[in-house]
Image 1 (tube, rainbow over the protein chains, first blue to last red):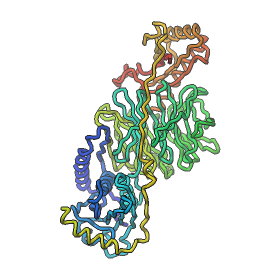
Image 2: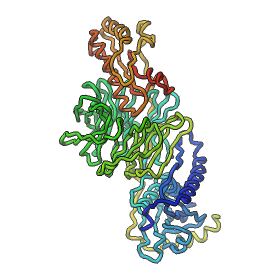
Image 3: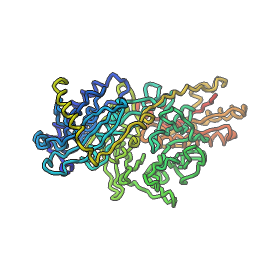
Image 4: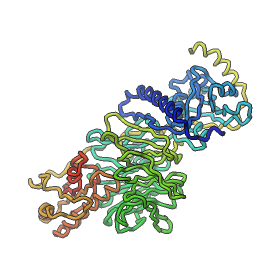
Length: 442
Length: 169
């Protein structure tokens, strides 16, 4: 689909779109604000000329207690890549090919046709098809569809999946809406590990502690989180099953235990231990057994992060003086230095597609999110803030979530890997830090 | 609005019954999602420190040593503090001390944790030099997680570059 290629905008369109999104989001966040710990998301910058799309009220959607199409529209709008055309109460049923010429005349590049069908078991089937409105007379206008069966309580995740489908079909990049994020909220001297949907909704508390919690790391299946808790007056790594609340100590060796990172197979984690002196990299089985050295250096080695093929571990080390990012070949043990451009490069996180590395660089006293193209080794600084920390990629390798500070208060932000789309996620009256983007929900 | 829609919805529902199932429509069921989405809350109780310490060892100024910027070397003003704790640990050989190293808040939390560990290690070595048995000492790091000062100035950062002696119950 030709229109799917995002081009640079005329400035006026850009500004107009930006205003629309802000107005929309202010409205949306007003509704949600009664939930005290809900993340409010505002788009602070948006990508090129948006795709214009119609996501109408679904046929028979009134039979659902909560609207699915609203979730779809909010996801697409918040991504910064789409502009929604309002059809009012008009529905576009899934069962027929819509009048694409009429939709194109309204300015639409794409149209979602969708219907809700009640099942005898009390659940619902959401049937939808996506059409390319610019190809009205063309058999290729049908971009495919799905039928999602859901209980009415699952209206949000269903909406996120539909939005992911649309996002992928129209941009060529997998979506990221049906994901969860983890982050730590500090409120006075109370720390909480929160799990929320990628849109900041449904925030739930996994752990509440009088001591700090850092470095949450999602297991590849999204069911468990490893993190460092200071509840024993020292850093200890726990693995916590989210659904049951069951947690177990992964590593509590003499000294400090920190920086857990799941291997892609979910069976091992890279961790940092000080049991043999300074902070060094180890690998440990997910049941806490079999800790063994991963690398040896005369300085600090920390912040391991696996490549998605499990072949390499990126990490931070000051073995040559200042902290820089290195890459360990897990099978050969050879180590290669990756960053050179600043005297302080930390917190490496490779994208799932293996093409990019996000990290934090000190640029003239400002700590900012940078991304390196791993084939050309070209680095781009993506932010203009000065206290950025803890970058993590969305599973689609395109958005980067990170912690930053505004007015002395910790908040989360997200930026697209090309730097064009920016969002801010904040909680009123609380410090938010240590974000980690989870895998796509199965 | 609903009244207006209803007749057309009925017509469309009938149309839906007649239409052929489309070949490339994937069907997904949410039945297995129930467990995945839930999160159960766990609450950690607070932990207390030892209450049977001599009076001087409860004085915060006798429980911390400070470090210069980007330095992991014990300063001379730290000697009396380290000697007092070495003496206590020599007299009470069952007592165990945790040395908590800290770093100022600039930069990565995990890297700062590693820097705090370096300070804790320096204090551990100084205690060893005073003859303290290694099994009585655990050197750990709190990184930037327990700042004593949060004003963000250099004098403030100086208070956060430290090693604390903690006797856990």
